[in-house]
Image 1: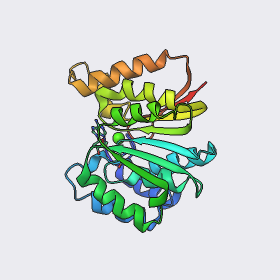
Image 2: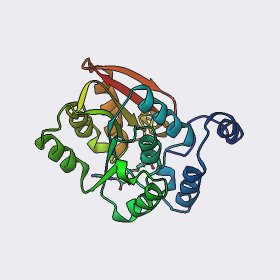
Image 3: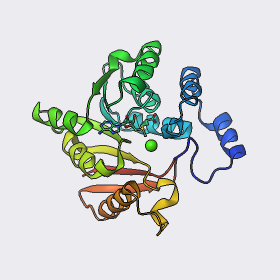
Length: 220
Ligand code: SAM
Ligand code: CA
């Protein structure tokens, strides 16, 4: 996990930021403010934010989900790619981190497009399903606690329409997926999730080496 795509040198990353990302000044400011947080490495890379935004607009998405919001950086990239009447439902348990997020969303004038649901994401997703929102979302980004990835993925598939896209972050887990010595819960969970996703024929799958590995699964 880091704020630049795995394998890129610092110099090449700086070049990429200069030539190929067009990070808006507000997003850059949020990234710089978050950099002072000891957990800053949880934030997605700028090139990944731009890419997620591109996917959201290519998909023509109007309704999106985010599982794991932190200080709101990935959410801002997603929300700004939605149409003015679009909706992004953000799930997180941290009041403190999402307080920062809310401040930037308001400054961007995008807070009317973002609904933050504070609480365990699984509960929120189950509430959405119970409220009849099955099949009503176009896009989902999963980036919260890793052991719950399989549950998030199932809920997101239920909430997406056919043709909708789920993007799952950190599927390389900084290379630990290949390290036989790495047996912690997060690494095991990601390995198991990847193995299952590789065989899941309910989706079209493309895993790409952007950020810390991003799995793109399109619901058939
Ligand atoms: N997508 C964010 C970004 O790029 O800035 C980073 C998200 S960070 C990797 C993971 C987030 O998941 C944290 O903000 C944490 O509070 C949240 N989280 C952890 N467990 C959760 C749970 N059970 N339900 C909802 N959110 C959770
Ligand atoms: Ca992540």
